[in-house]
Structures are given as structure tokens and as C-alpha cells.
Image 1 (cartoon, one colour):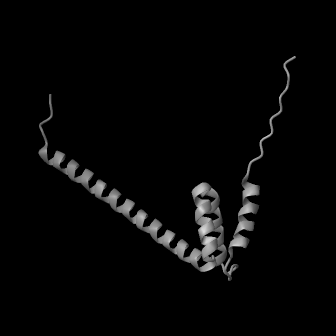
Image 2 (cartoon, helix red, strand yellow):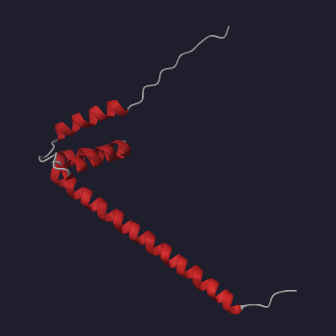
Length: 117
């Protein structure tokens, strides 16, 4: 026997889905705002601890090696926030930091070929 059509249950289901969608959108918007605020704080700290020339270099590195630039930015911000970096970093010092990290992060591959016997 077929169940009678329940208009109220269907309406309630539509309301429930709409509420879930609104909550999901609100959560996404909140996350977007939180990330934007964190990025703004990070950029402000970088403006304070890097000379203009060093910031320019880091921006250029970000275009070529975004993961390296992101790592350096995060490390510098962490040092500044903990008070372990209380001076500006100039372009030469940033070049040294980048070169040191690039050499440590570069993976070395070695291939060994063996002849079949």
C-alpha cells in the first residue's frame, strides 16, 4: 500500500536542506575571512622585518618557487612573533637564507644502472 503524500514532511526537508546550505556558506565565508586576516597580518609583519629590496626578491622567488617562498615567509614571521628577530633583513641576508634553504630542500637523485646478465 502506498503511503499518503506528506506535504509537511517534504516542506520540512526543503527547509532543513536550505538551512544546511546557509550554514555551510557561512562557515566557508568565516574561513575565508580568517585566512584573509591571517594573510594581512603576515604581510604586515613581513613589511616590518624585510627591507623593500628583500620583499621584492621574496615576491620574485614566490613566482618561481612558491613553496620555498612560503616556507621562508612562515619562518621569518614565526621568528618575529616570538621576538627572536628584532631587526630588518636586507636583500643580501635574504639571498643567503634562500640559497641555504634551496640547497637543503633540493633533492638529489642518483641512478645506478646495472647490466642484465
